Length: 325
Length: 255
Image (cartoon, each protein chain N blue to C red):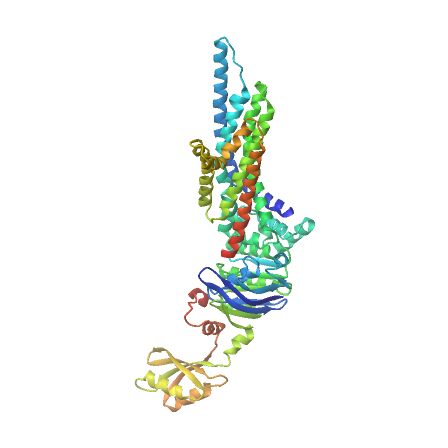
């Protein structure tokens, strides 16, 4: 449905998108994941024919964004990061206006305006001025606007940014319900969102694609590695953390051990295994054999977050709000 | 065409759902009404004077009232037009709705024409208020209506030309105030050029004088349609709209 090859976008001084390629099949929901400033919006703007790429090509439903922009535009519904709303219009008036722009008319137009208002749960405010709507409603009006002409492809730029948790959930449900009829690309810097909504994820950092895979595979990619939290207690006296750490590092299959915390004489470590090794049993035995008490031992799941952070490298600052989400 | 109409309707609605249209109309009605009153008062006074002196002079209402009023309206237009055009594109750029327009299956030219026609329609509606004043002349006298129609045609052409320039300037900024000020500066310049040219008779003075919008309007106020003035206004309209189209295009390459 969407095919991007060697897409590059250069501005006067910076390269926002550097030679990226990917493909999206019909009916898929794809998450475009990356820290702020990674080039997500630029890529989307190239796909929606808002701006032409410097080099490379992109096709939507078989139409090239440079050669046949009109055909591409007819098939795309786009929700930019800030919903493109006219505050002095009523919701129904706005949707009618957008419908006309997208080529609908007559009964068809009236019917679609009704349908999308129902679908996006904005029917109850259809006579209100957009200026008076809450942020959640505005976002949904933005979504309604994007699907009014029943496009093959939906491009959503950070559809949940700035919403409260309840609104975020509603918006996610709505997006999920749109899958199937539409091929959806959505960008986000929020990781759980990708895990929840998307089937496939494209991770992008500094304008380059660093990973393309299904969400399932990507989380498993590092799940072959086992992470274990180990808390060790001295049987008596004081326990030297360094000694415990070096002992744990000697256990076979352990790749690294990090001291996380020390309190009440106990030390908490996090140990990671090498690919495909299980280490819990060996860790427990080595601690007990060294004459210490094993206070706690539990597996730690590596979240997509960690995959993301390790892939997008450490020198990129991920906004703390995104990680805490 | 259909898309142009869609944009046109939206712009007209947004002019009239905000205080802009009413504010401009009130401002214009006040100023143009004042000028009309002054010229009529002068006309009446002269009429009485000439009768008292016992040797009545020919009193030409077209020459004494209609022409100066039209000339004044032409100048008031210079002040109104920046306020009409400043938001056209600047506001869309600021609020991000330009992304909706540009990613919809419509041509840039359709957007531009829709907006320009809407601005022209509002301008025509504002001018219409002064026509109410002038219509009163017909109740008390017999002015010639033809110069009046030509005068309004000239006002519309002059307005269309400045509106096209204003539309262009509105694409260059996200800030309405900057767009408005820029348009005002250029409108004013195009007016003042006339004075500059009157100081010299050299070639440059003629060229500069040729660019003066008001100089090209003057014949219309006398009821004269000169093809050279019509050509000037129409080519300025084309130039303005052409620059708008190029500016929208460059917006995409740079943005």
